[in-house]
Length: 152
Length: 335
Image 1 (spheres, rainbow over the protein chains, first blue to last red):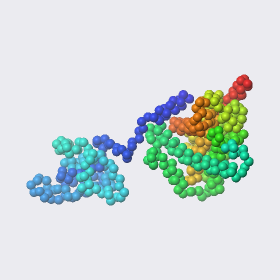
Image 2 (image 1 turned 90 degrees about the horizontal axis):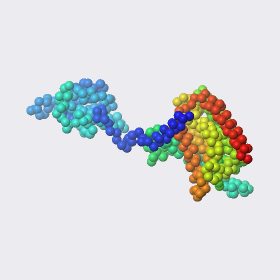
Image 3 (image 1 turned 180 degrees about the vertical axis):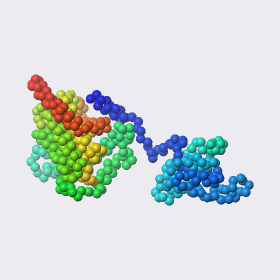
Image 4 (image 1 turned 120 degrees about the vertical axis):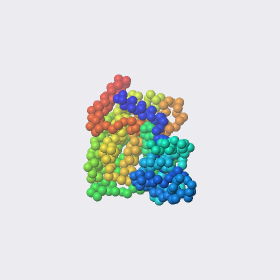
């Protein structure tokens, strides 16, 4: 009997307590830093090594390269087209792990819902412009440590 | 209203009666709609979440969306179900719920009938709903349905007994079964309200009322995850809305009865607060009763059917009998 009354007291207290409901979509959800969201692609860093396309478990990355128009640089190939099919991308992060130059990194964005399937086939321009909320350790403002880390 | 009832029946009187009945029906439908909204909001707030808040400002249009959904759904009648009884059952469940609202006095002037056997009328008519529920279970031609209806019928008839016996104490005190007289006898300060001399009766009444309404913790008939929704599993659309409607109208009626009989009806807690109209006091006390029912629903787990029956027959009935005897003895002593 006493337990019942105490229970009623508990629920009365929760009536005025702070609610746990997130106010999404009115307020955006701030994801933790290492969250695997949609990728960001930096065309200048890509050396067209094809590792990301090879390791992708769902084969959603398709890319083509072209001969580097600049004869002086050491880089042989430059990226021409780069597409990720987000119908099948599972955001597993393997492509960013193998990329030696960190040309492809993940951001914290996750809102990809569209009304038609065609819009889910993202091309290089879109991926390049998706540059908000990049993970802190991949942020372009800190380029130096990456080459050593990428090799590990 | 007294004036209209004491005159002989003419077209004007009949018009007033008919119009006020229709007005009550619309008010009750509107109140049920927002009672559902408030219940979801309260229960949500008690569970660390906000209730509905997307549809309309503060989620106020959620009930309207739900009602529209129920009305637009396809009306499915199972092929082997007993068609006439299937159609009759929701009607038989809802009509008594609405007609018992006639005997509850809302204020001194606003009442629908002045029956000398108001308490008896209330209990008798609310018993008809139980028949409706059992018919629903039978006519659905579904074992789960029948099981749910049997359980529900057993629960409701067993808890009718302590419900009636707990009210008898107040009838003894007031000397009449006329609910309006019972309210009038409670005028004055709040310690005149029947809840204080009849505290045992009030507690028994609250428990029996929760069981009668089939609300948590006694909501076995509705046990969504246990009995696959019990007796209304085969009902869709508007017929299902009728069952929900009758449950909520019964909640309104039961809270109204508790307010009238135990909490002093339209009387203010102190005579100097009389300037606030009686309807406001009635609504405040009624709202407290309804909030208490929501509070119980948010807090308590469900009891088992055997615990429920044991509790009703072995504890509540003797307790209400004790209450009646005590009341009678004390009344004799005080006389």
